[in-house]
Image 1 (tube, rainbow, N blue to C red):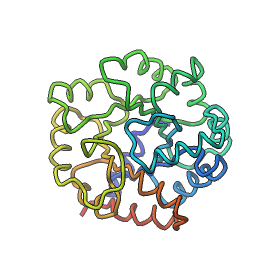
Image 2: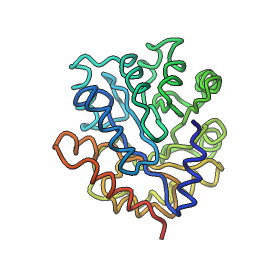
Image 3: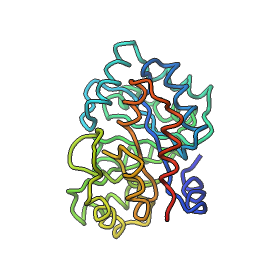
Image 4: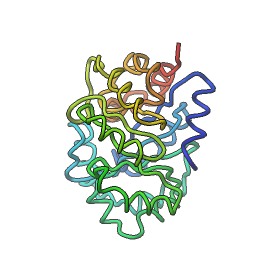
Length: 255
């Protein structure tokens, strides 16, 4: 399942795509599968699934905690991918993982992702200039490799990222790791504009989008928004997860 139709449907509704993040295996494998399906049913346009890793360098305390708990409970990527293949949530899936666990899956990584219905993969610690082999392997299975554009990236590097990424470009909204923030980065519209000048791919913003108002603030500038740490905290705190997804989805409408 390619991501293009998802973005097209969102544009036709005059919305940007909402992509919630769920840590696989947290608080348990079964519960994380339930949260993924609940997000799809509550209106998510796609779902980013984080495969736990012991050294998640791009992630802040919330996702680090969830990853640690999942690994402590015996999380296994292959078993999870088999389980999600059986559930098949009603929207596209994007896997976020790091290079080490990706390599640990070996030659079976992309076949397992394909069987699970994954449309795209994000590997934050895989730089653009080393991504060709992984991207080419993903293409064999119809899976996009999404690259990240940082606020500090030069225009030349943004052009290379735009040329090499597939599906969309993940625009990092802050300098630093993921995490809940009280205020959206006021420079994010300008960051998105810089990236927009270098690629025709959809732009999806992430890192620090913690309130529906943060999504509203970028709706005129982005094609999608990833909400992660805020949702992981909601799961940990026992909040109404589906209601929170709906509140973020309502904020995606372009005014």
